Each structure stands twice: as structure tokens, then as C-alpha cells.
Amino acid sequence: MEEVNLVSEGLKFMVLGMGTVFMFLILMVVILNFQAKIINKYFPEKPKAVKSPSKKKSVNDDEVVAAITAAIMKFRS
Amino acid sequence: MKKLLLVIASLTFIFSLNLSATPHSSEAPQAPVVEKEYESKTMGELIVSFYETTGLNAFLNPKEGATNAHGEELTIFQQTGGRIMMILITLLLFYLAIAKGFEPLLLIPIGFGGLLANIPLANIIGPGGFIGELYNAGIANELFPILIFMGVGAMTDFGPLLANPKTALLGAAAQFGIFGTLVGAVALSQYTDIFSFTLQQASAISIIGGADGPTSIFIANKLAPDLMGAIAVAAYSYMALVPIIQPPIMRALTTVKERKIRMSQLRHVTQLEKIIFPLTILMLSLLILPESSPLIGALTFGNFIRESKVAERLNDVMQNAMINMVTIFLGLAVGSKLAAEKFLVPETLAIIALGLIAFSVGTATGVLMAKLMNKFSKHPVNPLIGSAGVSAVPMAARVSNSEGMKADRTNMLLMHAMGPNVAGVIGSAVAAGVLLSIFK
Image (cartoon, rainbow over all chains, first blue to last red; front, side):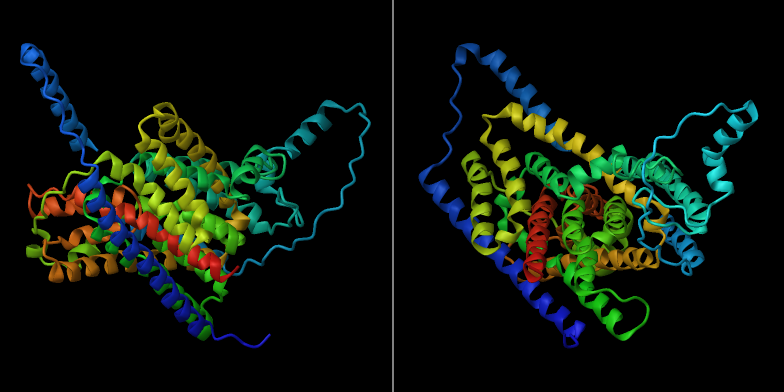
């Protein structure tokens, strides 16, 4: 086998490798942006149903507890 | 930083002692199993023969030509001083894990595996020994790294990436650590006598710059199985040392003003986007790089289970029981490569040095890319989140956050840094796939 110049091989690997990584992730960014547009346009998330006012107090308590818990979890993680 | 220097200095010292140690021959012993008939022994003989089976005797009277669990001959040094040094190194790992809190979940199993691997005569790491069997069951066939990736997928919320996809470019830039080090390593192999790695070995070593333990093991096993132990230990140690290695580099490359940059609030991501995301990634990897689809496939499977929200029990097992169990097995099996005759070789020193370079270069290019994006982007980008582009989830993102808070106590960068952080996982899996496809 003929002598391989390791450095020039390494440089070729670098070009191919970084090229592929960037291409993959740029493609991903493009697709994700596109996907987000489509989804938010045609399948928007339904706004949370408003609870009946009769249970207002307890519901509010639940929501407050949920919000605080979520905030704590987010802060801790 | 002091601790890191101490570790490197002590390792350097150990290797300089052992550079002259000759490589072991691979001649297997020919010992036909003959059942011995029991003969009556006097009490004295019993005591003497018992003493010969003790570890004390093995340390004090090393035998020329003694073999390890794999039937390879050991030098006198490997049987005595080398083992004692390795035991001291494992104790150092315990100290770092327990007193300093560096990745204790990984360093303790790895360290204990290393401790068990250096027990003379017991052959725990050979065929039939329990760690040897764990190694064959999960590392030799790359099963454990894949299972870990599944668990990582189930634990990872890709929401921050979906909310701001362009931060994925930071995860791509940080992979330069891998390829830059690859070129450096082969250049040094070609033009100097410091070490001589083949292209395969250099590739396996530089993947440490991806800061991803499972990926490193996966690649090392395919391209350079002999170097696996040192590569895995270096990769996990540097992941543990992220809070020490990264901040000086980040501070050197940014100004205080840049570190104070506030990033705009992330938009809300709908559940449908999160469910479709793993499938999108899998399709992309399937089209572009099937070679990396074992890793990406497992990652996306775990994430799909998580985001589907209807398989909560499976999700729970993946992100808790399964990944924890596999971590124990993987740690012990990797630790078996800390046996003196495997670890105390000159290459290990080069791997540790190159790994550190790969890691630092990756951090630096991530930060530089973030600075570049800040110049050209409509929304401000804090350069500190660039360093999270090396994987090491979620440690690297936490480091970005804490550095940001040092500059401005109210500036929370954590969620912004999670985007490049999880993109880094995908990026290093892609880089791994490219390297595999080259040597196919």
C-alpha cells in the first residue's frame, strides 16, 4: 500500500465532517422553521377551556398551585 | 482549575514512570484442565498454600510470566506498582466524585470497576468474571451506549431548540473540536515522534471533543477497541470537569458587555411540534447519514415515547430505571479497562491530552460562532450559550447559565443554552456517523 499523507487525509475528513454536520443542522433548522409555520397555521393549539365561574375559587387555587409548582420545577431543573 | 492541573500532573508522573514498560505478549497459556486428586496436607502446608493465593503474596512476590484474565502475560511492574497506582487513581476518582461532586453517578461505578479490575488473581474482568461478562454483554456489541441514548432521548425536552431552531448552528460549530483535534493528532503522528496514531485511532480519540460519553464508547469500539478504556475515562472525566474547563475559555473570548446580553423570551412550542420533531430528525438522518441512525434512532425513539404523552409508564422506565441500571453496568464495564496493563500505557497520556484539547477547541468555536451570530442576527445572542454546543447535557447549559448570572444576577440563560446543548447531541451523533462512514 502506498504511503498515505495523514494530514491531508485528516483535512479532508474535517471538510467532509464539518460540512455534513452543518448541512444536517442547517437543513434541520429550515425544516423546523417550516414545520412550525405549518403547524401553527393549520393546527393551532386550542386555547384552554375557561372553567365555569361557579367553581372559580377552587379552580383558581389549583391553577395557582400548578403555576407555582411549575415555576419551582423550572427553577430547580 | 487547580484540581484539573493536579489530576493531569499526577497522571503525567505515573506515565513517566511506566514509559519503559514493555508491551505484553499475547501468548495464551496452555493449561489443560486436569482434575487434581486431593492429598492429605499438614497444617503448615495448608497455611503456605493459602498464603500463595492471597493478594498480599501477589503484590509482594510477582511472578515472571504471570498472566491476566485474558491470558496475556504481565510484567512485574504491572503486577505490583502498576496495580497499586491504579488503585490509587480509582481512589482519586472516588474523591472527585464524592467530595467534589463531579458526575458521581458515573465516576463511582467506573472507579469501582477499576478497583475490582486491579485485584490480583481474582480475574473479575476476564471471561466468566462478572464484569468481563457485563463488558461482553453490553460494550463489545455497543448495546449499552445505545440504551443510554434511548434514556437521554426520554429525558430531553427539545422544546428550547424548537422555539429557537437557529441555535442549533452553535451545536454544529462546537463539533469543530472533534475535527480540529483529528487533524492535530494525525499531524503530530506524521511529523513528530511523540506518538503515532492511525487515522482510525485519531478519529476515535478526537470524538471526545463531542463531550458525549455514549458516542465516544460507540466510536471507540468500532474504530479503536484497544484505546476504549482510556477514551471512555477521558470522555467522562472531561464531562465531569465541564464546570472547571469551560468558564476560563468562555471568559477569555467574551467581554463583560457581551456576557450581560439578554435574550428575548422563547416562544411557546405546541405539543404537536414536539411529537413530530423526533420523526423529522429520524427522517433526516435516514436520508443523509444512515450510519449514525443507531444513535439517532435510539435518541428519537426515547423522545417520541416521551412526547407522545400516552406511554407514560414506558417513558418513566426509560428515564429512570433503565438508564440508571445501564449506567451501573456501563460504568463497571468501562472501569474494567482501568486494569494496570491496559491503562498504564504511553498512549493513555496522549489520549488525555488530546481529549482536553478537543474539548477546549469545541467550547471555543461554539462561543465564537455565538459571537458571530450575535453580529448578524436580529435578536441578540449571548455568546455564553455557544459553549453549550458541546453536548454534556445538561451540565454545559448550566455552566452557561451560571456564567451569565455572574455577569448579571438576573440574566437567566438556562433555557436559551438548552437549545445548542441538545443540538450538540445531534451534532456529535452526526459527526460520529461521518467518521464511521469514512472507515466503512
